[in-house]
Length: 288
Image (cartoon, rainbow, N blue to C red; front, side, top):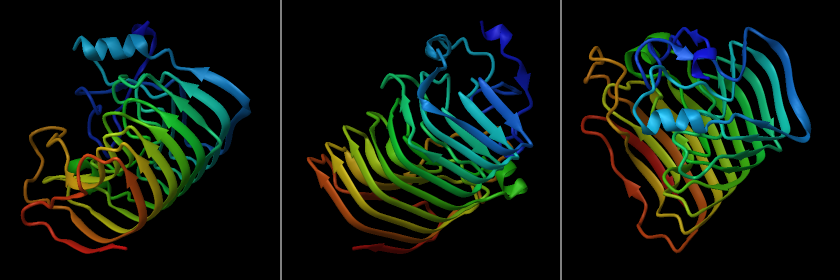
């Protein structure tokens, strides 16, 4: 019953719920200001029973932003491992304003048409390791974020020192790894390696937009195997969405230092796409 899911304050780096104005539903597993958190098991299952939430989204009757399956805020020393998470209402694992986070040995599953069921979304977090996970969902397998437009710019909490490795999975409409599009607090020092992605819209996507501000810098992407991925590498604008009408069209993101090597993409339908933003500097792109 959605009425039994309390409404909590919006994240300050977003200014409102990501899907609807105002607050947002609390997550199934939620923590704030914690130290030394372990969520683990012998491949046990936590089922978010997300279908009622997806139907509210599909029917356009959602009043508040959906909750995540797990969200930890302002916390440090976190381990999430050796479990299966299924059917998240919204993003599945969301560490936000956190440090020293390890997510490993996880299986994350949602129907391939389930809306916005991202696998793992580190957000304004630092020192994050995501490894040895299998993910299939209706959105990005891994998405790195740091806040939305003027709210993220003001808070200025970047995501940094992030390693994503040995991830495999599929998402028919989105990316194996997405950086952005909410990246207004900045994203830097990210390594993505040894991934296997198939039957997906994109392998690796860096997406941003006017109004985001911020920066994406020092990104290393290497040793990626893709099969039947529509666009293997994509740098492009996002969906031109903004939290309200107070965003600044002059807040242009900066992209610099993107190093991409050892990519194999079998049966792609398009070449890599490198599409910048008018007035924005995309600098130092190296493909090897």
